[in-house]
Amino acid sequence: MTSTILLQQIINGVSLGSLYALVAIGYTMVYGILRLINFAHGDLLMFAAYTAIYCVTLFALPWTVSFPLAVLLTGVLGILLDRAAYRPLRDAPRISLLISAIGASFLLENLALVILGGVPKGFPTPEVFREVIDVLGVRVQVLTIYTPLVTLVLLMGLLFIVYRTKVGKAMRAASKDFETTRLMGINLDRIIAITFLLGSMLAAAGGIMWAMKYPQVNPFMGVFPGLKAFIAAVLGGIGNILGAVVGGFLLGLGEILIVAFIPGLAQYRDALSFLVLILVLLFRPTGLMGEPMIDKS
Image 1 (cartoon, rainbow, N blue to C red):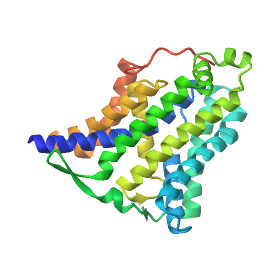
Image 2 (image 1 turned 30 degrees about the vertical axis):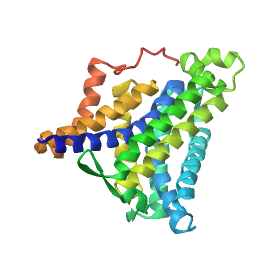
Image 3 (image 1 turned 45 degrees about the horizontal axis):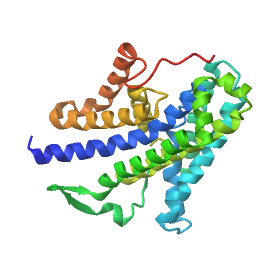
C-alpha cells in the first residue's frame, strides 16, 4: 500500500471515527448519571436528518438555518424522551429503564416509518460540502475534513460546560453520587434534562454529517451508527467523555484500515466491531479510560 493510499484511508478513518465519537458522547453522558444505556439515542440521528430535509425542501430554509434548527429540535426531542420514558421510572429498578429505552427506540422508528414512509430519501447536501480538495497529495471531499474539525469544536464546547460551569459541576456530582447530589438541593430532573439536551444535540450534529456522507435517509438509518457509537463508548470507557471520543476515533480508524489492508474482511466489518465489544467486556469492562463505577441501584 502506497503512502498516498494509506493517508487517504487514515483521513477516511478519522472522519468516520469523529461521527461515532459525537454519538458516543451522548451515550456516555446519560450513562454517567443514570447508569442507563439509552437505546433510543441512535434514532435521534434519524430524526435530525429528516428534520433537516424537511426544513430545506418543505419550508425552503437555507441550510445555514435548517441544520442548526434540526440540531435544536433534536435536543428538545431528547428532553421529551427523558420526560415521557425515563423520568416516571427514575426510582424504578434499572431493568425497567432499559426496557423503556428499547420501547422508545422501536416507537420512534415505527412512527417515522408510518408518518414518513419507508422509501429512502436523498439528503440535500450543500454544494460547499461536496467540493473536493487536495490534502498532501490526496484528493478528499471537503466534508471529510470538516467532520473531525466540527467534532473537536463541539467537544471543546462540551468540556467547557462540564468543567467550567455550575451545571457541569452538578452533572459531575450526580455522576459520582446520585442520592447525595439530590440531598444537597440540586434539581436532578433539571440536570438530567440538560444532559439529554446536550447529548441529543451532539447526536443530531453527527446525524446530519452522517446523512451528508451517506446521503440516503430512512427510518432505520440510526440503528447501526447508534450501535457502533455504543461500542465506541464501551471501548473508550462508558461514563468518560474523552474516553468516548477516543473510542470513536479508534473504532473508525480500525474499521477503515482493516478493510483497506485486508479487503477480504470487508464483508465482516460490522461483525468485527461487535467482536471488539465482546473482547472489551470480557477483558476490560471499564474500557480504555473508564473507572470502576459505584452501583447506584
